[in-house]
Length: 228
Image 1: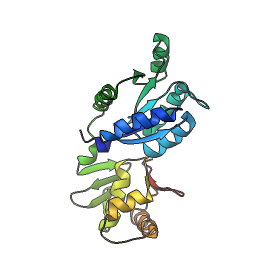
Image 2 (image 1 turned 45 degrees about the horizontal axis):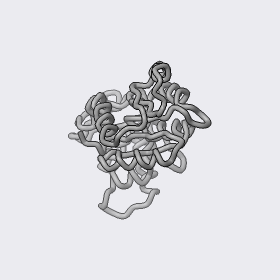
Image 3 (image 1 turned 90 degrees about the horizontal axis):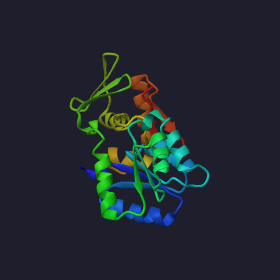
Image 4 (image 1 turned 90 degrees about the vertical axis):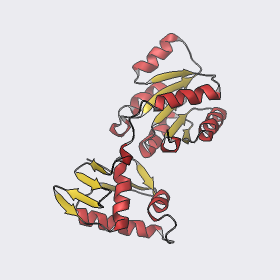
């Protein structure tokens, strides 16, 4: 398992727990993001599309049950595993959490090694990510990474290499927001020094050549691919 491919969202109103659990999961190679309350967690989850959410039950503003129910309403999070991570161990509480749509229930306190083992087991439920496939479809667009070809309605669209790579990255995870910094690092790497304006120009050219509006601008953050 390449743990760097998995993003885990920790939601807990106690910073000490976020720090401790986050440290142990990052040490194993996972990407970890945190939130102190359910309301903020919803926005983070929509933006980052984590593979796993570890969710506290008792939180201010929005408790874990309500947060779980809201997360389950987002189509882009349909494959995200949601697990309650709480000190409450009563049977009725666990049943309440599972009825809210959670996939599992972990009781605090727990040894870091046991938590990591549990997280590994949970993530194995996720099918192998299709990123390794050379051909994939997002909405009405087919992308062939081997031939560097984009096909829309049966017609091949020719894109410049950087335009193709940019579209491929965005379309590989519909609904996920990619920051400008992440796009620069993944598409341009260390080739040349470029500014953020370069991304805007390439996005505009992709939109013109594909005659679609799948790529959405998230002001002040970056871009995402909307497959609808």
